[in-house]
Length: 454
Image: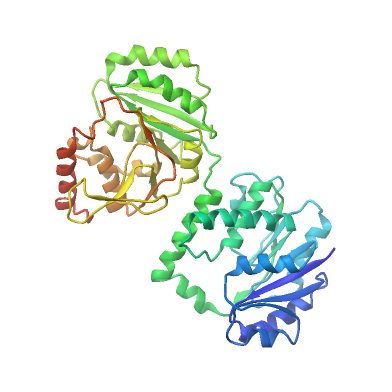
């Protein structure tokens, strides 16, 4: 079995020689190759006297450098070792390789500091990759099929987010590849420490820290976010009882099917009609209905979430005047993330301008406002007692503004424009046109009295 060690390096001349020396002592590796990714400090000159060097004139990032190198070097197993580590031994390198010899079905190994026992996993499914404690560890072993899938996933993410320079794309996308391939991964002991901490300390503070958190949010959302756990779909019904049949049918056609539906009926006179529709539809998912004596408007959704917050991690809000595409829930489930709201109807206010003067957003961009039609919400928002201290004026038609204000200003959460497509079904009953002045008044109240700086 041919096992090749890649040491990707960018301006690591002071450290690279010792890393190469230890890697070459491996009893299992066939070859050690340094990938000089556009260094300007003499990294190539130091490395070329002790091992093969593949050099690129311009720095393009770890993932692209390794992808091109693999095209030049054929192997059964590819090992990656960071060039800025120290304190490891050749036995640590062999720990990345030996499991492949012992188990032909193994797809990836991950080196872990402070290792305290094996966490080998068979038949990995969605979510189980989280049991890998150091999923950004650069010390790894890969079968070629894993890297091929890794590059496919990375290409898709980079195409969606062309303005983000991802630092841990290789590590996260390889975890995504393992999920996609339902592969087998094993953590192994690999003792090391960082010899160039300045890069990471900068990354953890200020602008760099915020930048990495944004990267992590995107990668978590794209790779790990399609939860196996059940979603709560929540809708409030008032004067569109005849739309329910179509809504139930569109939910039945969703690709993402692990959900329960909660309906709050704000108009008691439609109780029998709604109950009969649900019975006749024979939906393939659980449906729970609450019939209210009073019209609590869209705020009723939040009361539902408060009552079920211990059962679900995320709630998806839908309206009864929208058409759901078959990918709607799959997309929203993929955008579920802690302390986050993502909505198909989202925008940013123009500071000082009225409610209707706002900036449209592209999918993935940060928002001030998220509507409650086609939105996914971290349900823990509704565990906060202060949320339900909203003025009664916000219950009908203003619930979306209150949710946005409270999540953005009080909780300091992130709000985003969703990639989910939204299609309204016009029927002349939409409240937004009739509530224009009320929406503006509510926004000014939140700005002036509640100090929402938007």
